[in-house]
Image (cartoon, rainbow, N blue to C red; front, side, top):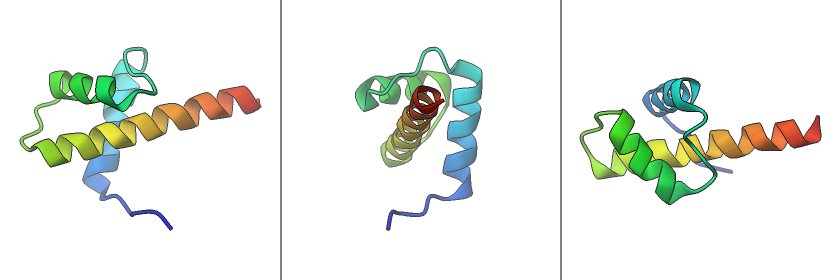
Length: 68
């Protein structure tokens, strides 16, 4: 079982992906720097969690496209 993410993380990541889908990729490090630029997130840990969820969403979307 995986870790359950709070609604704040999911909402923030979903909004960022909706607004900037083309800039994000499957690389966490790149997404981490992009999240820092697009959103004002006060802590490093919170930024990393949001970037990780953004990476998860992008990978999931690409996997769904391949399966179709």
